[in-house]
Image (cartoon, rainbow, N blue to C red; front, side, top):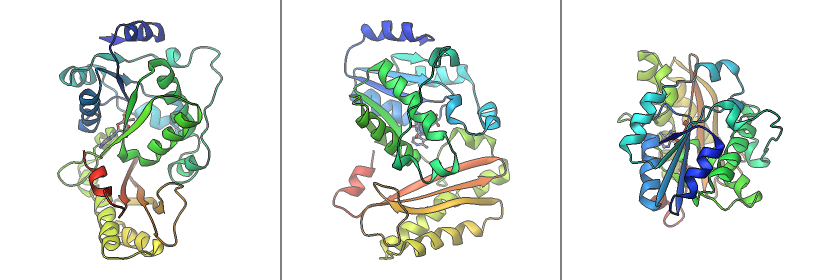
Length: 287
Ligand code: AMP
């Protein structure tokens, strides 16, 4: 059932059994979203999916306008996954007239995507706070592909005492390593063929790290060397950052996040890989 208003969503939720799992999306669903929905389905009595292209998290207006949308297609995907409730609101239902609050997370929202896309995480934290508050879910499911987003949302939920636990799910990839993303649809065939270079660069960092390399600079250089071989790729950043604070590391002496943002023409792609040798880290990364 597709619901449009806050009131209809709340009324429908009243009748649903707990625990409730929430999967927030911006639509143009792919199997990365499918994996989140399936994990939510396995762990909850009720699954709620939201489809909302959130204008406040786009720092470039043209990016919002050209973001791919196709509700009929999304609803077909959602129906196939056995979702209980779908909330696909218009913008003025999420941000009614007079709406005047910004949820702004601190340090962890500052570097990487926060620096590259000013205001982006304010928009994310604000809309997710609204969704958490409206749905009152027991768990909410997010992709590790947007690793910093998971950290920002965890911080927000903890600080605002919202009782929804944030579950991070593994990144789903194409056979050639490209992380699934709604934005991949904008790639030209040549750009699509070049795009697995993100994954190749992360693999180079992981291999160097597995071989004992602990210099942040050397690991960043390993990623840059791979990316520079691809003429269609314009590198925005490569990062080897502390796993909790996201501060850039000179020396990797604990869990770290290797991440990067790369442009192909007008399409911006991000990806990341966790570098963590603590016991059980590999198991925790698996679905
Ligand atoms: P989006 O619709 O792009 O805002 O993404 C909605 C949710 O799906 C976010 O939690 C994303 O991190 C997650 N997601 C997007 N792509 C993938 C992927 N390839 N694998 C796993 N999760 C993903």
